Length: 389
Ligand SMILES: Cc1ncc(COP(=O)(O)O)c(C=O)c1O
Image: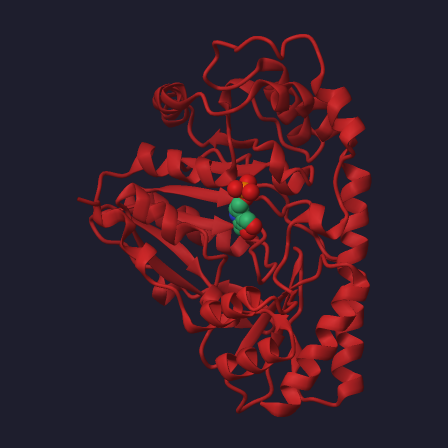
């Protein structure tokens, strides 16, 4: 009776089962994967959100499938502030970055077609691709002199390849798509007649002292779609607003917009109150982002101290941007055994393999957004688990 698209729904790994067992038994667990800003104390108050949404217009639905003109103008202003001109007609609002991906897969792929995705990366696309009947083919990001760069040998296309995803900056590595890698991706896309999808949800979170190469929304040579949204930019995932910037050559961009309009029109999924609040949210979000960058830096410093003070030969990978830390485990420590021990100590964290980290580099991925006290308790649990592993 059911579609094969949901075949992934039958599997649940042993670690997740062990975590669930703790929950059912009523045992407390510190969730060191939690990257929801509201859980970490960042976001907007009920009064602020109420005021921004309780405005003329919330009683109507705008007929423009791309989203409210006022919201799109505010997003165009967001890019102007980052040095790139984006026409508001080249913007589409969606309910989230995840939905933007699904719309682009519909736009670019027939069932069975293929999308190239970087590895390691946040495992968001497996489910979306399965639901769209699209196959993912990974290309490797490798560390070269401490920097994550594309392993060109792994970047190959088939006749089914329709697009390449890149993440600027990536989650969890925090690596920006460098000028060199942009040139590689552009040349590859031109040669293989495919588009580029550039996910920039973490663009505004460079680590201190890191020079960001900036948004790629100014691309003119190759069909390119930039994705972002309020969930990270304005720390408001609950408002459910993402967007797509259609970049690239004028004729391809115009055709993309014409087709995307049909997709957006079929769903009209963006709610009006959030769109009405969006201009003010974007204008006022920077202090919240500063607070997040400060928290992330504070927890990262605590993590460095933890490594030196415990004397364990674990290592923190350099974080050019983003909210996550990659803790490389001491040689010989198996990710899964360590994380089972961590669960026994009341701490939940993700293994590196969950993100496609190289097997030669066993690691755990930690959210740096947590309340510093909770983060410290989590680290103490990880320390006990490390000693047992
Ligand atoms: C790189 C990346 N893109 C997109 C998303 C999802 O964004 P949204 O909440 O807008 O769907 C995430 C979620 O953490 C992410 O890490």
